[in-house]
Length: 293
Image (cartoon, rainbow, N blue to C red; front, side, top):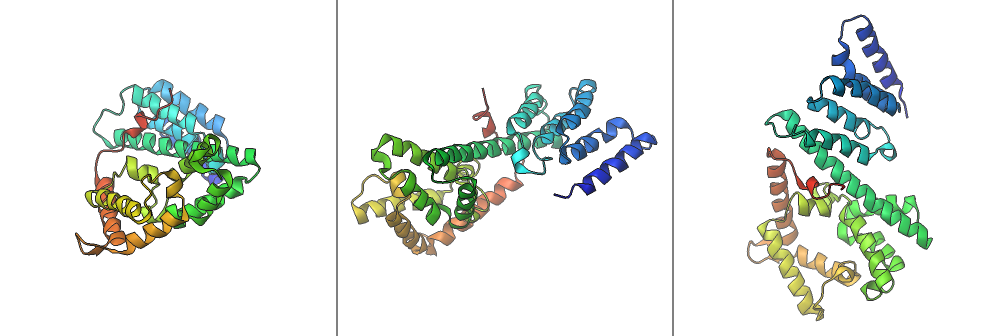
């Protein structure tokens, strides 16, 4: 990784401060960001702690302290979601998110983003631990699963292959059922291309299904039950080849109510809901339910 541009930027900012062309307080955030991006996390934190001490109610100081461990880490594996979340919550607990301004909104957005990333990281770590314990995979398996779920969603062939390996007994065996839930949790938190880059978890939490999707998915379950006689569409069904094939055929058929292909109907509805959400002024507050105690 080429860090020269950050080192050069740091030198320029420090020269400006030394020549008194830029006040230390005005340069603090820039200096902290450049230090963090070059791997000097503790030094970056010390810079911002001085600012917090002098201006304890300035939201930008807490945002910077959180981003030192989060957005400003050039390598994802170096991110410390717990530390970032702690700093963002310090500002939140001081009541700094109550204002109607861009900084308050930014704080809420940061809390939502880091919560989602932490939950995704925990799901991946749990799956990796399980794969290691069974001796059937490593971090490359996780990377390949991410890619497969991104492109294929619930129809991911690799996801179904792994499910058969880690849970051969399905839900009938308690150990297999636990492993299947760990795999499903990973799937639930993995972004998908056909969901506009959101994960299934985010689609449920941030973009609840619209009226057409609720109806169509209910009709899918009913149609599958009629076709197979299976009255319990559960986690095993969801990952089965039969269900995936049935779902694909069902979604490509025309919806009799709207005369549109079901997949097109739901895709259009999801896009509309996503646009409304992204244009809205109220960030997701679900991070409060998933806050560490």
